[in-house]
Structures are given as structure tokens and as C-alpha cells.
Amino acid sequence: MGACMNANAAGVVARLVRLWTRAYTQGLPAEIRRGRLGEIESDLWECQHDADRPANAAEMFARLLLGMPHDLWWRLEQTAAASARDVAPAPRLVRASAFTCSLAFHLALMAGIVWWASWPAERVPPRVFTSQPHLTDDRAVPVAAPPAVFESEWRPAVKRREDTLAATVFPAIGAQGVLTTPVAGRAQQPIYLLGTWTLDPSRSDGSHDWAAALPAGDLPRPPPPPPPGPASLTITNRGNDLVVDQKWPQGSQSITCDLVDAATFSARTDEKMPDVPSTIAFWDGARAVTRVLVSLKMSRTATMPVELRTTYRADETTLQMNSEARMPQGMYTRRFVYARQK
Amino acid sequence: MRRKPGQLLPLELAICKAARDITRRSDKEFHGYEIAKHLSEAGDSRLLVAYGTLYRALGRLEDMGFLESRWEDPRISARENRPRRRLYVLTALGDTVVLEAAKAAKARVRKQKWAPA
Image 1 (tube, chains in turn brown, yellow):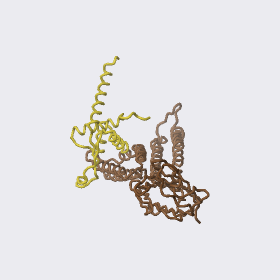
Image 2: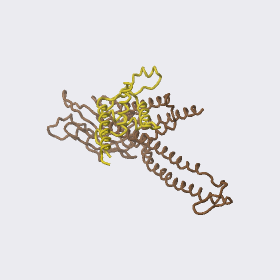
Image 3: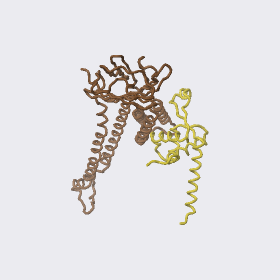
Image 4: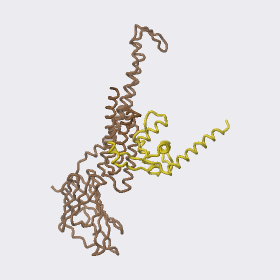
């Protein structure tokens, strides 16, 4: 029966280990995530089916807890490596993962502290029932006065524990609140970006086309930009897609970016933006960055690679769009301000 | 504290030694749990190395070129009705590191033995 109970407990701990692994690998490139999940799954299976060494739930739980700091550190290393490879996960996913990890870690920490704090109380022997006169440090206490013994030895021990509890659990709860509230608060921030916006020409740079910012000189120049006019911008979030529709008197442009995972980003743009090899979007509720690599036609035969990086920031009434065009000759920036359409 | 490049932590060295032992004993690749078990037996410890500690160290050793890994053929795991294993093997570089560490440990012992009382 004991073995059966231990097997059940091992199953529960194995589930916890899987849950934790999913939490701290959330948002990583799919290949790395699958690798780590596969390793842990294999380890759990081997541990539960090892004939020489029966699975021990307490040991598995200890392995989980002791490895948590290393898991978090590994996660940071992987995120840094992914950033270096420029396939960083969407910040929303990173934050959700950080929040889950932080919450799990603090819950485990608090469970440990509460368990530790409650442990000695069960261990202190109730000396009130002793049949022998009990000797304290400096005087004999008769049997007829058991409460005095209780008060002198048992109560201070409990009092010490209570003090320790007050000194550890409550700061831990406070620290957890401090650590997790900003993360949760940011995750709950309203998505101001979504909606339809109208260009405010008085606060924007002259044209909607970044190419207008190209300096004169020997640089190859694209066709002249269309004259500025009333322009609108509509941002929608369809499922896992961020869709940015731009309209101005002379034309329109639409960019759709997948926001599922950094490893599965794909670009779907309309015919107005040909030759788009890749699009990446970072989305975090109040701010979005789209990065589009285009091959700009300079003439019938010549093309120029350009990276268009656009940052959208919005509050309830105003949207600020900063456009950067990075090309071999340099970088040009444009700034546009939109007002929310009522 | 940032460690020097190429410097091994005690756990990483212990993993390399365990990998060498397993390879010499059975001449086969090994998986993570096998290493954890071997470390526990060799170190006379009741507890296996924690998941995060073990797999992070294995990853680091692979990055440093001391270990190589591959995923097991899915047909084998399917036949045995279990998850796929990630199989590791000690590289020649890893083998050299273990030998050098053993030599250094021997030299330390000899030095202590001949040191004046």
C-alpha cells in the first residue's frame, strides 16, 4: 500500500515537474523548448520505471525545488541567446512566463517556510504531564504546578517560532507582492493600440513615405513620394495576428504579422509591398514594434535592401508612430502622430 | 563571479568523469537520468542531482565541446513504449579534460604527502 501511495505521489510530482518545465520554457524558440521538455519527460519516465531505484516522490520534489534557480538561470541564458540570434520571443510571452515562474517560485518558497515554521510545534514534548519533579535552570518545579513548566519552557519555544514566522512569512508575502504586482499590472494593461486613427499633420513629419527623408546627393533615390494628405491607420488584433492597415489618398498598405511564437513568425503582406522576405513583430499591449525587411526597387534592375522598423505607442487619445528606415547608406527616421478616430 | 572560459565547475567535472566511467564500462551512449544515478552512487549521495542543475550542466558541457548529444531513433522508443532519450557521448576533448583533472589531483596528493609536517 505504501509503495502504491508513493507511486501516486510520484505521479503528482511528475505532473508538477512537467508544469514547471512548461512554464519556464514558455515563449522560447520551439526547438529549444521541445528539447528541454523531451529531456525532462525522459528523465521522469526513467525515474518512475527504474527497477534498481524505486521512484521516491519526496526526492523528485526536492530535485524540482533545488533545480528551480538553475532553470530560471538557464531560461535567462536562452532568452539572451535568442536575442543575439534576433529571434527573441514576443515580450508578452516572456512576461507571462516570467510571471508564472515568479509565482511558482514564491508559492514554493512560502510553502517551505510555512512547513518549516509549523514543524517544531509538533515536536516539542508536552512536559505538563510529567510525573517527576522537573528541574529548570535554577529551581525545582513541583508536579503540582505543571502550568508553570508549560509557561517556562513550552511557551517561549512557541513564542520564538511565532516571532520567526512573523519575521519570515510576512516579509516573504510582502516581497512576493512587490515582485509580482508590477508584472501582473503590466500584463493587464489595456491595449490602447487597437482602433482607427487619423493623422495629425501639424505634429507629424511631412510625408507618409519614409523615402521623402532621403538626403539629396549621390544616393540612389526611389520614385518621389506621394504628397501628404489625410491618412488613417487601423490596427486590429485578429487571433494571433496583428494587422496594420494604412490608408492615404494615393493608396493603402497592409501588414499582417503572426504573434504566436518567434520561431513561427511569417509575413503576409498585400501586393503593395512586394519582395518581403521577413516580418517580425513584438507586441506588449501598449507598444508594438514591427520590423519588415523589404527589397526596394530603385530602377528596373536595381534593388536596395531596406529594414523598416516601426514603433507604435498609444494612449487613449494619441498614437505616436516612429518609422526608421535602415539601409546600407544610413538610417532615416520619421515621426507621425495620430489622433483616435471617434 | 564570472568564471574563466573553459574552467569546469566540480559538477561538470564529475559529469565528465561519470561519462567516462559509463563509456568504459559499457561502451555506449548515456542519458541524463543515467548520469544522475551514477553521480549519486559515486558520490554516496541519497539524492539525485536536481533537474535544472543536471540539464543545464549537460547543456554547458555540450556547448564547450566536452559532450555530444543526439536524440534517439523514435522507432526504438516507440518499440519500447517510452519517451525518446537524449543520448550523450563524451568527446575526445572531454576525455582529455578528465585525464588532466585526474593527473592534477594525483599531483596535489603527492605534494601534500611530501610537504614538511
